Image (cartoon, rainbow, N blue to C red; front, side):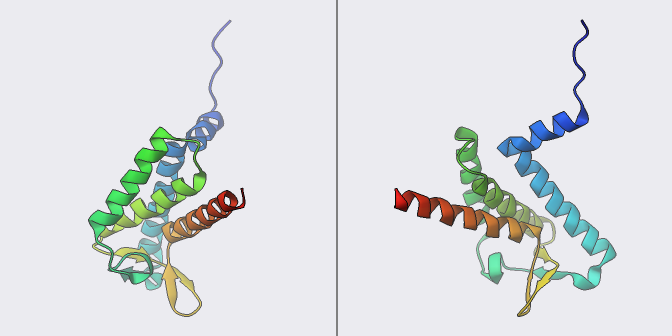
Length: 139
């Protein structure tokens, strides 16, 4: 009997269902979105020389925190998808700061707030963190 052929869908599902695979896909999606906006909609782009919410967080600090969480994820892959979202957002914005010397923001919110896909990852990662902390406090 010939071996079963693996479909592309099966490969993609297995890739994104693993935390590290999801991390790579999430960072890639954010970077592609930024490249597309810079190229085709430059009027939407605002370069943010700071980090989250324009706070001046040193690049090395954000990279070290992200790598630390990533190492924890490798050791404990079932700990929570919220961690993957935090790492993806942090590393993707850190990559911007290395490549562009600023974070590329293009999603315009009310009150003159501008963000990007990585910021959305960070937001939902923090929501997951708070939910997990509240659940632990209830037990």
